[in-house]
Every structure is written in C-alpha cells, then in structure tokens.
Image 1: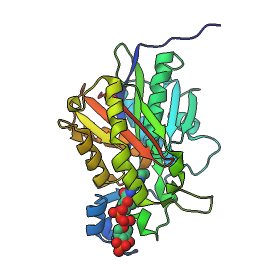
Image 2 (image 1 turned 120 degrees about the vertical axis):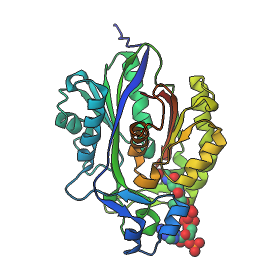
Image 3 (image 1 turned 90 degrees about the horizontal axis):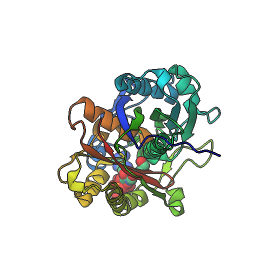
Length: 318
Ligand code: UT7
C-alpha cells in the first residue's frame, strides 16, 4: 500500500464574511424583554447584532461568506477539492451542509463534511483542513463557519437572546512551502457538557453563563499559550489575537493573561454579537478588510464553547 504526501505546509489565502442585513440594537431588545443597553454593553460588550429572517438560512449565509472568500483567494471553484462547514445550528442534520454549500458555489464533487465543535468549530475545521493539505488528501480547502443562532434562541429569555446572533465567515486553505497554519492545541471538558446545551428538538439554547464565564477566563489562556509554544511563537510577536467573540470581558481577560502586548485584539462582538463558529473568521475577515492587521503578520486564534470544546492555533495572515 502507498500513502500520499502533500505540501510541506498549508496557509490561508483569503477570508470572507457575510452578515444578514437586519440590525437588532440593544434598544430594540429592550422593547420586548426586561433588559437595557447599559447592562448588555457593560456585561457582554455588544452594541448591536444581525439576525436573519425566515428567508435566509445558515446555508445561505455560508454560501455568501464562502463565495467571498473564494473570490478573494484568486482560485476558481474547480480548484477546491474539500469543503468543511463548521456549525452547531443547522436546521436540518441530513443531508450535511458542506455538500449543499459546495453545490451552490459550483464546486464539483469535493470531499464535503460538517464539523460540530460549537464555538470552537472553525478552529477545529481549520486544523483538519491544514492536516488534509499536508497529508495530500486535499489540495485546496474551503472552510466555512456559519450559524443561525436566532433559530435556537428563546426570544423571551434575556439570558441568551441578548448575546447570540447570526453570520458566517470563511477561509480558503492552500498548500504552502512554509508553515502558514501552526499546530493546533485542542481539547474538551465533557464534564461540563450540560453548561451549554439544547436538550432536545423542542428546546431552546440554554447556558449556565457564570460556569462558562469562569471556565473561559481561567482555563483557556494556558491553551492559547500552548498553541504559541507549539508554533514557536512568543505571544509578544503576535500581530493579532482573535478569540471567539463570546463576551468582551472574556476576550479582554484572556488577552491580558496571554500577554499579547503588541497584538490587535479582535472586538468584533461589539457589532456582531456572539456568532459561535462564525465569530473568528468573521472577525478576521473584517479586520483584514479594514486594514487593522498586517498581511504576513501572525495571528492567534482561540475557539471555545459548548461541549465544552476548545482549539487554538497560530496562523500567518493573508
Ligand atoms: O459562546 C459560547 C461560550 N459562552 C460564553 O463564553 C458565555 C460566558 N458567560 C457570559 O458571557 C456571562 O455569564 C453572561 C453574559 C451570559 C451573563 O453575564 P453575567 O455577568 O454572568 O450575569 P449574571 O448571569 O450573573 O446576572 C447578573 C444579573 C442578575 O441579576 P441579579 O440576580 O444580580 O439581580 C441577572 O438576573 O444581571 C441580570 N441579568 C440581566 N439584566 C439585564 C441577566 N441577564 C440580563 C439581561 N439584562 N439581559
């Protein structure tokens, strides 16, 4: 038996993102539930979020973001031979989302699978994409994080409705002579699985906010540091730190403990809310679009969420 060998490294050629048009402000939410702009901004950091209507599915969001990443990469649909969709809010489990997204983008007969690692999903998917390119099982990979959390949230429950939102972000991963996606540091804490869950098909998303908050602000900076160590990068060398946009207080606490003193910190949650697997690629895509981070600089990604799952890696910015 023979085995394949791929490229020495993998790198991200481009990002793309998409948000639904409908903006929901904190004041909008305060009209229908007992909350207010001051509480949401000071406790979570969100000013506004986007919510898709019934006419737009998580697949539609993924197609938009994936199409933009593909166009920005300079590759053609025919160059992509693997599509991975990270999501925990798919309306239908069968068939998978990746095949449908690929078909809508005109990508012919790619390998296509979904990843559910909740808010860590994009970092998990990126890691498997990089491994596939380096092992030779794929050449160019489209990785999409897409979420329509609005369809899993109880819009009368202020503990979740003010936090979660909809959106999609995508990246195109290609072979490279030099490493552009560092080794992943990943894991899970299944003992805390009940802390974020949708119990059954008739239930909405439930979150033990404080349990997750404590875990996120104490257990994750060592994972971020481990990802830096594995990539041989000191946190002070990072040009950007892009953690999952769960809560601005969590983002800032982890950034402080990490010591990424020269990095631009992603604060996309302010205008996007918490979009789970979409939050990291969406934030990166927007930071690049606004010229906030340098091409060729190093960025540390850190996904974490339901499971509880987590994954972190250093990437070179396209
Ligand atoms: O993305 C997946 C990973 N998820 C996370 O990382 C989320 C982690 N957790 C969090 O971000 C925070 O725990 C939340 C944002 C969910 C909640 O913030 P908190 O600072 O932990 O608030 P709390 O639940 O301790 O509630 C504090 C107070 C309570 O009132 P009393 O009992 O002190 O009078 C709540 O009833 O705030 C009240 N409260 C609200 N008030 C206005 C809770 N939700 C709201 C609200 N508006 N939406």
